[in-house]
Amino acid sequence: MIKELKDEAAKISVYADQFNKRMRIDEYHGALPEVLSLIKKEIQGWTEKLIVKAYSRDLSFFLSHGFGCEGFIKNYFSGADMFFVVMYFSSGREQSKKWHEEQSIVSQILNSDKDQSSLKLDNIEIASQSQAEELAKVYGEIFQVYPTPLNTSEHVLKTMEEGTLYVFIREEGEIVSAASAEINRKYGNAELTDCASVERVQGRGHMKKLLFKLENELTKQGINCLYSLARAESYGMNKAFFQLGYTYGGRLINNCYIFSGLEDMNVWYKNG
Image 1: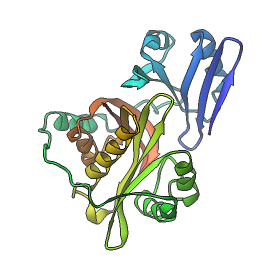
Image 2: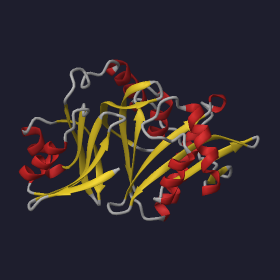
Image 3: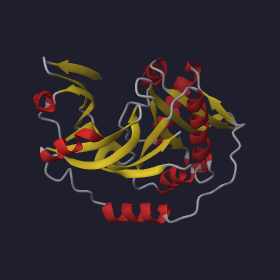
Image 4: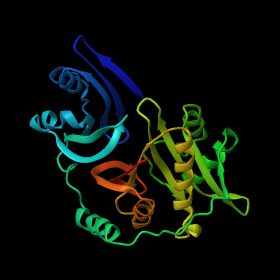
């Protein structure tokens, strides 16, 4: 849950994510020293990682106060660039165990050719609330660990009501692949997320089609900044974003618990 805190000189929006032992500042306004003071007051004993979505103009301030920078998204704030600035409060959380292997994956992808073939989207459906329970069941089967309770129909329904757009592919009567877009209308951006395919259809290009479908729908709604955080270990997911014309924007270290445990996430973005 996101809550707002403010004093006479500053205001911040805080997402306290106890499951992932991190705190995220999604917005801030006001004098930067007071912003930082508000942030520090919110640090809890369980907080291992602090993430601030910082304006590019404020990057030097955060760096000079002990933060590091792990990634960026161009035009995130209604045309202004955003940088992920971070600070760690746990020994070892800032150290990636698979950095070199993940960097090798990124290098291979960035040096590969993009697939220019057209995508057929005739078998993709936009989910309604009636599919919430089915989507939750599929996500629960695919992900043993996930940053949000996506395996519950209550969570899927809640996010749908808040404006999240889900799309899926059905084969032989069952949902086999799904993805979603969390839309931020205030700043005109959307995060493409919750990407999953059952094992028997992996490698068949389903996810690329779902992402492209989401892009089309978001463009119709005037959303011009798209981004995603992809598991750094997943060659297929990172390759899909690259082939769809996304730009690599860095890597968030030990960012969240997903799939098998605490993992690094690669940033990909695209501007319409």
